[in-house]
Length: 498
Image 1 (cartoon, helix red, strand yellow):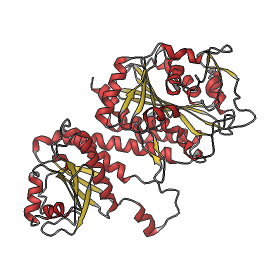
Image 2 (cartoon, rainbow, N blue to C red):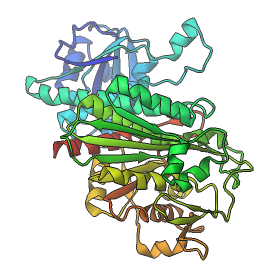
Image 3 (cartoon, rainbow, N blue to C red):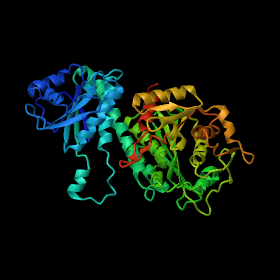
Image 4 (cartoon, helix red, strand yellow):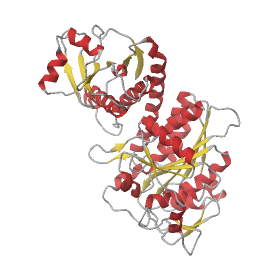
């Protein structure tokens, strides 16, 4: 898909769909007034009919509007005095409605909308990301052919964003560039996450990483179980014992910064399927445990976005990947394993396996002397209970890093909320049989999970993102969201600009 900047006569331009923002109460923009004059006050008539109200996220498609050359006119509500949330809702609604049509081309005037708290670059990025998100379809495993397959896809191929003023063009172009890179990264993360566990295995993920050497210029290394055993990754390897699929430790390096520059390290949990092991999960919705590798998928997405943007920054992505299944060789409650750090862990619940593979990956990251380490994981149901779906749980022992990530989440419309990693919670991990237990009891489950990881990060600037509530959505339209690729990429962009 091609998204570009343009400056056209919106009345006479020939396009499959023209998108304009409509105020709910305030005076309409100059763009709307031009359309009104050409169409004999079409918009006013639709507002008077009550079929469309201009509230944020409302939208209506008018086919074959008289007086203009566009084949369709898409009206999208922006509210009264739109803020960033209103604009994001409008951009998403416009993109969804656009992709429901058979439009191949479109012109969007949404970047002309005045929005409190957003500059032109941010507006362009939000519009572009919304288009990428709306175009995403996971249909590669369906047997549809011909017209049925065509109808299931979004036919959109070209979108022009109206610049409005030549002074706006540099920021708008940068917003389009960022939006395209982030949109592509999100789509990659969603595609990997939506694949079923019988196809997306640890070995498959390793193969997908190797493709990035050619497509994105990344340096990729994959450690097999023999190499991990030599490194004494006893925690990670204990998880894969119950599976016939061998574990992999995938590292991807993007080298856009100066030689010797300390890299940012992103570590993503890559559990390609999690049945809970001996502590077996309930059968209901267990199919969604293919999404337990969304943290790893987000690392893929963020690394490819950084490469596409050619950021002047060094970034290392580490994805420990395994399955967690019940078997005669699987971890048992009460087992004690030794991590790569030498610390011993009593496994009280085999379904708390994510922290076991992450702790060895965190220790492995020390060899890169990182400037910051961020791990991303669908780690705890407790975080879903605490924060629901809107916010990712953010845990960090470094205030500066935590504040950076919170700000990036706000800017990227991919929000996080900071949770405590206080020493008072550490006592819940105490056990008489090892250095620590892998769970801390019924209370504060997301916090004690983060406290467990914190024990392996004493020498690091570290943050943990619990994405259990934000990485996918359930229900009839279940699927991966691609979060937090937007947050991570914004963090990398900001770090590259420092």
